[in-house]
Image 1 (cartoon, rainbow, N blue to C red):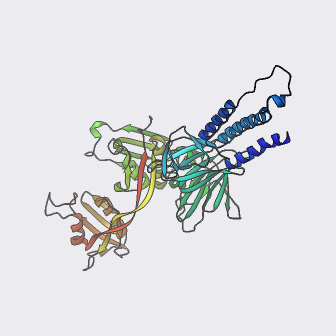
Image 2: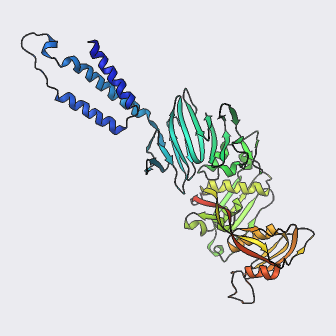
Image 3: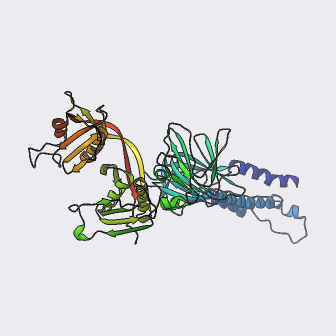
Length: 490
Protein backbone atom coordinates (compact mmCIF):
# COMPACT_ATOMS: atom_id res chain seq x y z
CA UNK A 1 0.00 0.00 0.00
CA UNK A 2 2.88 2.36 0.76
CA UNK A 3 4.18 1.78 -2.74
CA UNK A 4 0.77 2.74 -4.19
CA UNK A 5 0.78 5.98 -2.22
CA UNK A 6 4.27 6.89 -3.40
CA UNK A 7 3.49 6.42 -7.08
CA UNK A 8 1.14 9.44 -7.50
CA UNK A 9 3.51 11.71 -5.58
CA UNK A 10 6.55 10.68 -7.60
CA UNK A 11 4.55 10.95 -10.80
CA UNK A 12 3.35 14.47 -9.91
CA UNK A 13 6.89 15.60 -9.09
CA UNK A 14 8.20 14.32 -12.41
CA UNK A 15 5.37 15.93 -14.39
CA UNK A 16 5.52 19.30 -12.63
CA UNK A 17 9.29 19.45 -12.91
CA UNK A 18 9.16 18.84 -16.61
CA UNK A 19 6.01 20.80 -17.44
CA UNK A 20 5.99 23.66 -14.97
CA UNK A 21 4.21 25.95 -17.39
CA UNK A 22 1.94 23.90 -19.68
CA UNK A 23 0.09 25.66 -22.45
CA UNK A 24 -3.74 25.47 -22.48
CA UNK A 25 -3.77 23.11 -25.45
CA UNK A 26 -1.26 20.83 -23.68
CA UNK A 27 -3.50 20.69 -20.62
CA UNK A 28 -6.53 19.72 -22.70
CA UNK A 29 -4.62 17.05 -24.63
CA UNK A 30 -3.16 15.51 -21.46
CA UNK A 31 -6.57 15.43 -19.81
CA UNK A 32 -8.12 13.64 -22.80
CA UNK A 33 -5.37 11.01 -22.77
CA UNK A 34 -5.83 10.31 -19.06
CA UNK A 35 -9.58 9.83 -19.38
CA UNK A 36 -9.23 7.62 -22.45
CA UNK A 37 -6.81 5.34 -20.65
CA UNK A 38 -9.09 5.09 -17.66
CA UNK A 39 -12.05 4.19 -19.88
CA UNK A 40 -10.35 1.31 -21.71
CA UNK A 41 -9.27 -0.52 -18.52
CA UNK A 42 -11.43 -3.70 -18.17
CA UNK A 43 -13.91 -3.70 -15.33
CA UNK A 44 -13.98 -6.99 -13.42
CA UNK A 45 -17.58 -7.85 -12.57
CA UNK A 46 -18.26 -8.80 -8.98
CA UNK A 47 -18.82 -12.48 -8.21
CA UNK A 48 -22.03 -13.53 -6.55
CA UNK A 49 -19.97 -15.07 -3.81
CA UNK A 50 -18.25 -12.93 -1.27
CA UNK A 51 -14.59 -12.64 -2.20
CA UNK A 52 -11.72 -10.57 -1.05
CA UNK A 53 -12.04 -7.28 -2.94
CA UNK A 54 -8.32 -7.23 -3.60
CA UNK A 55 -8.52 -10.68 -5.27
CA UNK A 56 -11.72 -9.98 -7.22
CA UNK A 57 -10.54 -6.61 -8.54
CA UNK A 58 -6.81 -6.77 -8.94
CA UNK A 59 -6.73 -3.48 -10.93
CA UNK A 60 -8.39 -1.40 -8.20
CA UNK A 61 -5.24 -1.52 -6.12
CA UNK A 62 -3.55 0.99 -8.42
CA UNK A 63 -6.52 2.58 -10.15
CA UNK A 64 -7.72 4.87 -7.35
CA UNK A 65 -4.30 6.43 -6.76
CA UNK A 66 -4.00 6.93 -10.54
CA UNK A 67 -7.40 8.61 -10.69
CA UNK A 68 -6.46 10.85 -7.77
CA UNK A 69 -3.18 11.71 -9.46
CA UNK A 70 -4.96 12.49 -12.74
CA UNK A 71 -7.45 14.80 -11.03
CA UNK A 72 -4.64 16.48 -9.07
CA UNK A 73 -2.68 17.01 -12.29
CA UNK A 74 -5.72 18.55 -13.97
CA UNK A 75 -6.27 21.02 -11.11
CA UNK A 76 -2.59 21.89 -10.80
CA UNK A 77 -2.19 22.31 -14.53
CA UNK A 78 -5.24 24.57 -14.65
CA UNK A 79 -3.83 26.60 -11.74
CA UNK A 80 -0.45 26.93 -13.46
CA UNK A 81 -2.14 27.94 -16.69
CA UNK A 82 -4.12 30.64 -14.88
CA UNK A 83 -0.99 31.86 -13.08
CA UNK A 84 0.64 32.47 -16.46
CA UNK A 85 -1.93 35.16 -17.26
CA UNK A 86 -0.14 38.51 -17.02
CA UNK A 87 -2.79 40.94 -18.20
CA UNK A 88 -4.84 42.22 -21.12
CA UNK A 89 -4.00 44.20 -24.25
CA UNK A 90 -5.62 47.64 -24.31
CA UNK A 91 -4.60 48.55 -27.86
CA UNK A 92 -3.28 46.56 -30.84
CA UNK A 93 0.16 45.10 -30.11
CA UNK A 94 2.48 42.48 -31.57
CA UNK A 95 3.89 39.36 -29.93
CA UNK A 96 7.18 37.81 -30.96
CA UNK A 97 7.02 34.01 -31.14
CA UNK A 98 10.33 32.72 -32.46
CA UNK A 99 10.68 33.93 -36.05
CA UNK A 100 6.99 34.89 -36.20
CA UNK A 101 5.32 38.18 -35.30
CA UNK A 102 1.73 37.66 -34.18
CA UNK A 103 -0.93 40.35 -33.84
CA UNK A 104 -2.43 40.90 -30.39
CA UNK A 105 -5.88 42.47 -30.46
CA UNK A 106 -7.42 44.72 -27.77
CA UNK A 107 -8.92 42.58 -25.01
CA UNK A 108 -6.67 39.60 -25.78
CA UNK A 109 -4.92 37.88 -22.88
CA UNK A 110 -1.21 38.53 -22.38
CA UNK A 111 0.79 35.81 -20.65
CA UNK A 112 4.05 35.53 -18.77
CA UNK A 113 7.13 35.16 -21.00
CA UNK A 114 5.40 37.00 -23.86
CA UNK A 115 7.62 39.40 -25.79
CA UNK A 116 5.53 42.40 -26.84
CA UNK A 117 6.25 45.08 -29.40
CA UNK A 118 4.38 48.23 -30.40
CA UNK A 119 3.78 49.19 -34.03
CA UNK A 120 6.30 50.84 -36.30
CA UNK A 121 4.22 54.03 -36.35
CA UNK A 122 1.80 53.57 -33.46
CA UNK A 123 2.06 53.35 -29.69
CA UNK A 124 0.51 50.54 -27.66
CA UNK A 125 -0.75 49.81 -24.16
CA UNK A 126 -1.71 46.95 -21.87
CA UNK A 127 -2.91 46.42 -18.30
CA UNK A 128 -1.45 43.89 -15.86
CA UNK A 129 -3.64 41.83 -13.52
CA UNK A 130 -2.75 44.06 -10.56
CA UNK A 131 -4.04 47.15 -12.40
CA UNK A 132 -0.65 48.46 -13.54
CA UNK A 133 -0.99 50.30 -16.87
CA UNK A 134 1.92 50.33 -19.34
CA UNK A 135 2.05 52.55 -22.41
CA UNK A 136 4.66 51.81 -25.08
CA UNK A 137 5.94 54.31 -27.60
CA UNK A 138 6.08 53.17 -31.22
CA UNK A 139 8.97 50.80 -32.04
CA UNK A 140 9.32 49.76 -28.39
CA UNK A 141 9.78 46.22 -27.07
CA UNK A 142 9.58 44.44 -23.72
CA UNK A 143 9.05 41.00 -22.20
CA UNK A 144 6.91 40.06 -19.21
CA UNK A 145 8.58 37.73 -16.75
CA UNK A 146 7.78 36.08 -13.43
CA UNK A 147 9.79 37.34 -10.45
CA UNK A 148 10.12 35.50 -7.14
CA UNK A 149 7.76 37.96 -5.48
CA UNK A 150 5.89 39.55 -8.37
CA UNK A 151 6.19 40.55 -12.01
CA UNK A 152 9.23 41.84 -13.89
CA UNK A 153 9.07 43.93 -17.07
CA UNK A 154 12.28 43.52 -19.07
CA UNK A 155 12.53 46.60 -21.31
CA UNK A 156 14.53 45.92 -24.46
CA UNK A 157 14.20 49.19 -26.38
CA UNK A 158 12.04 52.28 -26.71
CA UNK A 159 10.10 54.47 -24.28
CA UNK A 160 7.54 53.44 -21.68
CA UNK A 161 5.14 55.18 -19.31
CA UNK A 162 4.32 53.00 -16.30
CA UNK A 163 1.35 53.63 -13.99
CA UNK A 164 2.34 51.27 -11.19
CA UNK A 165 -0.61 50.09 -9.10
CA UNK A 166 -0.57 49.70 -5.32
CA UNK A 167 1.14 46.44 -4.41
CA UNK A 168 0.49 44.03 -1.55
CA UNK A 169 2.84 41.14 -0.92
CA UNK A 170 3.84 41.17 -4.58
CA UNK A 171 6.09 43.71 -6.33
CA UNK A 172 6.44 45.24 -9.80
CA UNK A 173 9.98 45.35 -11.16
CA UNK A 174 11.17 47.14 -14.29
CA UNK A 175 14.60 46.11 -15.50
CA UNK A 176 16.94 47.28 -18.25
CA UNK A 177 20.61 48.22 -18.75
CA UNK A 178 21.55 46.35 -15.55
CA UNK A 179 19.29 48.69 -13.59
CA UNK A 180 16.20 47.54 -11.69
CA UNK A 181 13.31 49.85 -10.81
CA UNK A 182 10.58 49.10 -8.31
CA UNK A 183 7.47 51.23 -8.37
CA UNK A 184 4.29 51.24 -6.30
CA UNK A 185 1.38 53.65 -6.67
CA UNK A 186 3.58 55.81 -8.90
CA UNK A 187 3.87 57.07 -12.47
CA UNK A 188 7.23 57.13 -14.20
CA UNK A 189 8.80 57.21 -17.66
CA UNK A 190 11.64 54.97 -18.81
CA UNK A 191 13.63 55.69 -21.99
CA UNK A 192 15.87 52.87 -23.21
CA UNK A 193 18.43 54.20 -25.68
CA UNK A 194 21.65 52.82 -27.13
CA UNK A 195 23.66 55.25 -25.00
CA UNK A 196 21.92 54.42 -21.73
CA UNK A 197 18.81 54.69 -19.61
CA UNK A 198 16.73 57.71 -18.55
CA UNK A 199 14.08 57.61 -15.80
CA UNK A 200 11.66 60.46 -15.08
CA UNK A 201 9.24 60.29 -12.14
CA UNK A 202 5.91 62.07 -12.58
CA UNK A 203 4.14 60.98 -9.39
CA UNK A 204 5.09 59.00 -6.30
CA UNK A 205 8.45 57.38 -5.56
CA UNK A 206 10.52 54.85 -7.50
CA UNK A 207 13.30 52.75 -6.00
CA UNK A 208 16.28 52.60 -8.33
CA UNK A 209 18.86 49.84 -7.98
CA UNK A 210 21.88 50.29 -10.28
CA UNK A 211 23.92 47.28 -9.20
CA UNK A 212 24.35 46.73 -5.45
CA UNK A 213 23.38 50.29 -4.47
CA UNK A 214 19.88 51.76 -4.26
CA UNK A 215 18.46 55.24 -4.76
CA UNK A 216 14.98 56.66 -4.33
CA UNK A 217 13.64 58.96 -7.04
CA UNK A 218 10.73 61.21 -6.13
CA UNK A 219 8.25 63.15 -8.24
CA UNK A 220 10.06 65.67 -10.41
CA UNK A 221 13.43 63.90 -10.43
CA UNK A 222 15.19 62.57 -13.51
CA UNK A 223 18.04 60.05 -13.60
CA UNK A 224 20.23 58.77 -16.44
CA UNK A 225 22.99 56.16 -16.55
CA UNK A 226 25.05 58.22 -19.00
CA UNK A 227 26.10 61.80 -18.26
CA UNK A 228 26.16 62.49 -22.00
CA UNK A 229 22.42 61.87 -22.31
CA UNK A 230 20.44 65.11 -22.62
CA UNK A 231 18.01 66.02 -19.87
CA UNK A 232 14.44 66.35 -21.14
CA UNK A 233 11.51 68.44 -19.99
CA UNK A 234 8.31 66.73 -18.95
CA UNK A 235 6.54 68.06 -22.06
CA UNK A 236 9.16 66.47 -24.29
CA UNK A 237 9.03 63.17 -22.44
CA UNK A 238 5.27 62.67 -22.78
CA UNK A 239 4.68 64.31 -26.17
CA UNK A 240 4.09 60.91 -27.81
CA UNK A 241 1.58 59.66 -25.23
CA UNK A 242 -2.15 59.29 -25.87
CA UNK A 243 -2.74 60.67 -22.37
CA UNK A 244 -0.77 63.92 -22.32
CA UNK A 245 -3.48 65.99 -20.62
CA UNK A 246 -4.03 63.33 -17.92
CA UNK A 247 -0.30 63.07 -17.24
CA UNK A 248 0.00 66.83 -16.95
CA UNK A 249 -2.80 66.85 -14.40
CA UNK A 250 -1.08 64.14 -12.36
CA UNK A 251 2.28 65.86 -12.41
CA UNK A 252 3.42 67.72 -9.33
CA UNK A 253 6.25 69.31 -11.26
CA UNK A 254 6.82 71.85 -13.99
CA UNK A 255 9.57 71.35 -16.53
CA UNK A 256 12.10 74.15 -16.70
CA UNK A 257 13.53 75.10 -20.15
CA UNK A 258 16.98 73.70 -19.34
CA UNK A 259 15.52 70.26 -18.72
CA UNK A 260 15.34 70.08 -14.94
CA UNK A 261 12.26 70.15 -12.76
CA UNK A 262 11.12 72.35 -9.93
CA UNK A 263 8.61 71.23 -7.31
CA UNK A 264 5.34 73.12 -7.03
CA UNK A 265 3.23 73.54 -3.91
CA UNK A 266 0.21 72.54 -5.97
CA UNK A 267 -0.22 70.69 -9.28
CA UNK A 268 1.54 72.58 -12.04
CA UNK A 269 -1.34 72.33 -14.48
CA UNK A 270 -2.14 76.07 -14.07
CA UNK A 271 1.05 76.85 -15.98
CA UNK A 272 0.44 74.10 -18.51
CA UNK A 273 -3.12 74.65 -19.73
CA UNK A 274 -5.24 77.55 -20.94
CA UNK A 275 -8.20 78.55 -18.81
CA UNK A 276 -10.46 79.16 -21.82
CA UNK A 277 -10.05 77.77 -25.34
CA UNK A 278 -12.24 78.27 -28.40
CA UNK A 279 -11.75 76.24 -31.59
CA UNK A 280 -14.11 76.87 -34.51
CA UNK A 281 -14.08 76.05 -38.21
CA UNK A 282 -12.89 79.04 -40.23
CA UNK A 283 -15.76 80.60 -42.22
CA UNK A 284 -15.59 79.49 -45.84
CA UNK A 285 -14.99 83.00 -47.15
CA UNK A 286 -11.88 83.34 -44.92
CA UNK A 287 -10.48 79.80 -45.29
CA UNK A 288 -7.91 78.39 -47.70
CA UNK A 289 -4.38 78.96 -48.86
CA UNK A 290 -5.21 82.27 -50.56
CA UNK A 291 -6.19 83.91 -47.26
CA UNK A 292 -3.43 84.54 -44.70
CA UNK A 293 -3.11 82.69 -41.40
CA UNK A 294 -2.50 85.32 -38.72
CA UNK A 295 -0.84 84.47 -35.40
CA UNK A 296 -0.91 86.80 -32.40
CA UNK A 297 0.09 86.46 -28.74
CA UNK A 298 -2.01 88.98 -26.78
CA UNK A 299 -0.45 90.24 -23.53
CA UNK A 300 -1.11 88.19 -20.42
CA UNK A 301 -0.68 84.68 -21.81
CA UNK A 302 -3.15 84.74 -24.69
CA UNK A 303 -2.99 83.06 -28.09
CA UNK A 304 -4.92 83.60 -31.31
CA UNK A 305 -4.45 82.04 -34.74
CA UNK A 306 -6.85 82.30 -37.67
CA UNK A 307 -7.26 80.17 -40.79
CA UNK A 308 -4.87 77.53 -39.44
CA UNK A 309 -4.53 73.82 -40.02
CA UNK A 310 -3.66 71.33 -37.30
CA UNK A 311 -0.28 70.82 -38.95
CA UNK A 312 0.44 74.55 -38.71
CA UNK A 313 -0.49 74.50 -35.01
CA UNK A 314 1.87 71.58 -34.45
CA UNK A 315 4.70 73.42 -36.21
CA UNK A 316 4.15 76.45 -34.02
CA UNK A 317 3.81 74.57 -30.73
CA UNK A 318 6.94 72.45 -31.24
CA UNK A 319 9.06 75.05 -33.06
CA UNK A 320 9.43 73.06 -36.29
CA UNK A 321 9.42 73.76 -40.00
CA UNK A 322 6.79 72.33 -42.34
CA UNK A 323 9.13 69.66 -43.71
CA UNK A 324 9.77 68.37 -40.17
CA UNK A 325 6.12 67.49 -39.48
CA UNK A 326 4.84 64.30 -41.12
CA UNK A 327 1.98 61.83 -40.92
CA UNK A 328 -1.64 62.37 -40.02
CA UNK A 329 -4.83 62.12 -42.08
CA UNK A 330 -5.51 64.36 -45.05
CA UNK A 331 -7.69 66.76 -43.03
CA UNK A 332 -4.73 67.56 -40.75
CA UNK A 333 -3.26 69.71 -43.53
CA UNK A 334 -6.45 70.90 -45.19
CA UNK A 335 -9.22 71.75 -42.72
CA UNK A 336 -8.99 75.28 -41.35
CA UNK A 337 -9.70 76.48 -37.82
CA UNK A 338 -9.84 79.72 -35.87
CA UNK A 339 -8.26 79.22 -32.44
CA UNK A 340 -8.38 81.59 -29.48
CA UNK A 341 -7.16 80.82 -25.98
CA UNK A 342 -6.66 82.76 -22.76
CA UNK A 343 -4.84 82.13 -19.52
CA UNK A 344 -5.42 83.76 -16.17
CA UNK A 345 -1.69 83.64 -15.54
CA UNK A 346 0.66 86.19 -17.04
CA UNK A 347 2.57 83.58 -19.08
CA UNK A 348 5.54 84.22 -21.34
CA UNK A 349 5.93 83.13 -24.96
CA UNK A 350 7.70 79.81 -24.16
CA UNK A 351 5.06 78.88 -21.59
CA UNK A 352 2.25 79.70 -24.01
CA UNK A 353 3.79 77.33 -26.57
CA UNK A 354 3.70 74.55 -23.94
CA UNK A 355 0.07 75.41 -23.29
CA UNK A 356 -0.63 74.98 -27.00
CA UNK A 357 0.90 71.50 -26.84
CA UNK A 358 -1.42 70.58 -23.97
CA UNK A 359 -4.39 72.07 -25.84
CA UNK A 360 -3.58 69.99 -28.93
CA UNK A 361 -3.38 66.82 -26.85
CA UNK A 362 -6.64 67.62 -25.07
CA UNK A 363 -8.86 68.95 -27.86
CA UNK A 364 -7.38 67.13 -30.88
CA UNK A 365 -6.26 63.99 -28.96
CA UNK A 366 -2.89 64.54 -30.65
CA UNK A 367 -0.32 61.77 -30.33
CA UNK A 368 3.12 62.44 -31.83
CA UNK A 369 6.46 60.70 -32.13
CA UNK A 370 9.74 62.66 -32.25
CA UNK A 371 12.94 61.22 -33.62
CA UNK A 372 16.19 62.28 -35.26
CA UNK A 373 17.39 60.71 -38.50
CA UNK A 374 20.29 61.19 -40.88
CA UNK A 375 18.88 62.87 -43.97
CA UNK A 376 19.64 65.30 -46.80
CA UNK A 377 20.38 68.85 -45.69
CA UNK A 378 21.99 72.00 -47.06
CA UNK A 379 25.12 73.61 -45.66
CA UNK A 380 25.44 77.39 -45.90
CA UNK A 381 29.02 78.08 -47.01
CA UNK A 382 31.16 80.97 -48.27
CA UNK A 383 32.21 81.18 -51.95
CA UNK A 384 35.90 81.03 -52.80
CA UNK A 385 36.04 84.77 -53.49
CA UNK A 386 34.67 85.51 -50.02
CA UNK A 387 31.36 86.88 -48.69
CA UNK A 388 29.66 90.05 -49.87
CA UNK A 389 28.57 91.13 -46.42
CA UNK A 390 28.94 94.22 -44.25
CA UNK A 391 29.24 93.81 -40.49
CA UNK A 392 26.47 95.37 -38.36
CA UNK A 393 26.90 96.85 -34.90
CA UNK A 394 23.77 95.26 -33.46
CA UNK A 395 21.00 92.85 -34.39
CA UNK A 396 17.63 94.02 -35.72
CA UNK A 397 14.33 92.24 -36.44
CA UNK A 398 14.11 90.58 -39.83
CA UNK A 399 11.88 92.01 -42.55
CA UNK A 400 10.43 88.85 -44.05
CA UNK A 401 8.28 89.01 -47.16
CA UNK A 402 7.56 86.66 -50.04
CA UNK A 403 10.86 86.44 -51.92
CA UNK A 404 12.62 88.90 -49.62
CA UNK A 405 14.66 88.73 -46.42
CA UNK A 406 16.52 91.65 -44.86
CA UNK A 407 17.83 92.91 -41.53
CA UNK A 408 20.88 92.77 -39.29
CA UNK A 409 21.08 89.03 -38.75
CA UNK A 410 23.57 86.30 -37.88
CA UNK A 411 24.48 83.46 -40.21
CA UNK A 412 22.63 81.01 -37.98
CA UNK A 413 19.46 83.11 -38.27
CA UNK A 414 19.86 83.31 -42.03
CA UNK A 415 20.33 79.54 -42.23
CA UNK A 416 17.18 78.95 -40.18
CA UNK A 417 15.17 81.19 -42.51
CA UNK A 418 16.55 79.50 -45.63
CA UNK A 419 15.39 76.14 -44.27
CA UNK A 420 11.78 77.34 -44.52
CA UNK A 421 12.36 78.43 -48.13
CA UNK A 422 14.05 75.29 -49.50
CA UNK A 423 12.04 72.80 -47.37
CA UNK A 424 15.20 71.23 -46.03
CA UNK A 425 17.35 71.89 -42.95
CA UNK A 426 20.14 74.41 -43.51
CA UNK A 427 23.13 74.48 -41.15
CA UNK A 428 25.60 77.33 -40.84
CA UNK A 429 29.08 76.31 -41.98
CA UNK A 430 30.30 79.74 -42.99
CA UNK A 431 32.54 80.21 -39.97
CA UNK A 432 31.37 83.83 -39.78
CA UNK A 433 30.47 85.19 -36.32
CA UNK A 434 28.56 88.31 -35.41
CA UNK A 435 25.69 90.00 -37.26
CA UNK A 436 25.64 91.33 -40.82
CA UNK A 437 23.52 93.62 -42.98
CA UNK A 438 21.55 91.20 -45.14
CA UNK A 439 19.44 92.09 -48.17
CA UNK A 440 18.27 89.05 -50.14
CA UNK A 441 15.71 89.05 -52.97
CA UNK A 442 14.80 85.97 -55.01
CA UNK A 443 12.06 84.23 -56.98
CA UNK A 444 9.63 82.74 -54.43
CA UNK A 445 8.94 79.64 -56.53
CA UNK A 446 12.67 78.72 -56.64
CA UNK A 447 12.75 79.28 -60.41
CA UNK A 448 13.06 82.14 -62.88
CA UNK A 449 10.28 81.02 -65.20
CA UNK A 450 7.92 83.83 -64.17
CA UNK A 451 10.54 86.60 -64.44
CA UNK A 452 13.96 85.60 -65.74
CA UNK A 453 15.42 88.76 -64.23
CA UNK A 454 14.72 87.51 -60.69
CA UNK A 455 17.20 84.80 -59.61
CA UNK A 456 16.43 81.66 -57.65
CA UNK A 457 17.28 81.65 -53.97
CA UNK A 458 20.41 79.60 -54.78
CA UNK A 459 21.60 82.10 -57.39
CA UNK A 460 20.61 85.10 -55.27
CA UNK A 461 22.77 83.87 -52.36
CA UNK A 462 25.81 83.65 -54.63
CA UNK A 463 25.31 86.96 -56.46
CA UNK A 464 24.04 89.11 -53.59
CA UNK A 465 25.75 87.69 -50.47
CA UNK A 466 28.72 85.67 -51.73
CA UNK A 467 27.28 82.52 -50.10
CA UNK A 468 26.03 79.21 -51.42
CA UNK A 469 24.00 76.18 -50.40
CA UNK A 470 25.85 72.86 -50.61
CA UNK A 471 24.17 69.46 -50.45
CA UNK A 472 25.14 67.47 -47.36
CA UNK A 473 23.97 64.83 -44.90
CA UNK A 474 23.14 65.49 -41.30
CA UNK A 475 20.75 64.86 -38.39
CA UNK A 476 17.19 66.03 -38.97
CA UNK A 477 14.64 66.17 -36.17
CA UNK A 478 11.17 65.10 -37.29
CA UNK A 479 7.78 64.82 -35.64
CA UNK A 480 5.26 62.25 -36.87
CA UNK A 481 1.56 62.67 -36.15
CA UNK A 482 0.48 59.19 -35.12
CA UNK A 483 -3.05 60.07 -34.04
CA UNK A 484 -5.38 63.07 -34.23
CA UNK A 485 -9.15 63.52 -34.15
CA UNK A 486 -11.40 66.44 -35.01
CA UNK A 487 -11.49 68.87 -32.08
CA UNK A 488 -14.06 68.50 -29.36
CA UNK A 489 -16.79 71.10 -28.94
CA UNK A 490 -16.06 74.30 -27.03
